[in-house]
Length: 223
Length: 270
Image (cartoon, each protein chain N blue to C red):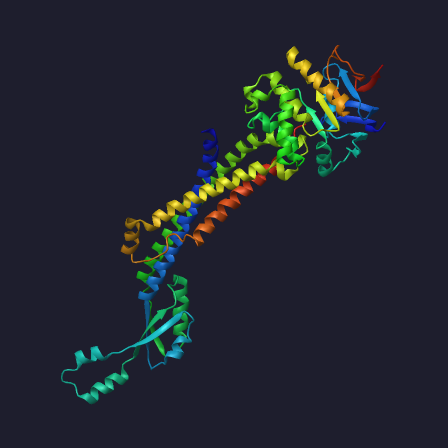
């Protein structure tokens, strides 16, 4: 199987130089479903940030989708990000755009044609059960609904990989289940690699997955 | 309503800059026109021991545009009673020659000094009357007026520049979230900043249009035109093509610089 992520002696730190991830070695196969767990402040979100290039490796090597992220140029990073879908705990929706336009964002960036964009957004709104709210703005929706919009946005451009940072952290059971179903669906039906940072792995997961645990800056695979 | 308010703050700042710029242009034009008027009515008199031809006088200084000889006939006519014609002719020959010099432009006091000096270099010229005291008063008044308007424009420009920088910080705050989110999905810099540049260009167009309307009105206002006629000058207050394009260019340049500063100052969230 192709390796979509390959980390060798990867160390990560912020500007204060405190090492968050220390000389990690791991690889992730294309099409796999990965959970990353760990205590608060252990470096789960930091690791995820490094996967979409928001934090560059301090030492070692990190290759994502064939792109070496150490010293990556902005052009290459943009190219990589156009093939990734990201779901954030705080949703990161553009407040001044309605939810249709928010979902459209990766399609616009990837240069999709208008009619394809429209059809794709309609279909995703049905999937996340928000078709009746399409003209609304993010702040008019509940937290669960906003996260469903963010989920639809992450799926819109059929990315090779979805990165989700505690996607169900603050959500009600209904929205949480819907998010897990969508992530499972993307992985099983579209063969999208899914990497989820979370405190708890849901018991209802019906698919095979890998589990990495972070402790004191070290990453271990849990069998 | 919120969107109108968002536009209004930059539009007002840009409009103030355009307004002060156009006022300065109009004042500059008016002063030039006034100086031209003064140049026509201002002249220098020189007294020469012997007759000088026009070419010699014109060659003394480049500022001299026309020369005319002042004939002493009228004065001699007054003294004529009881004089023999032979004596009158003799008097005519012994009297010095008077010349009136018109200049190409209204000179600065230093230029008058130089001109006087160059005229006196000719040994035949015995006296130069430059009416410097009345000239100096008029010239200093003009200079004072121009400087006051210049200072006034600088003050408006500085205040509005500060307003624009305040607006820049608001825009930076407002647009940085959207730009960061777009960056997370791989949008190139031109796409991330497209909304910002569109807003900046729209605001520049609105403020230029506003300035265009205001100055079109002013330039056709009877009361204002009468004021210019009273002081005896005729100037173009607002040229829809030349001045309109100038104002549009300034507004565009300022708003694009503003948007570029925001884009350059934007830092991606980590």
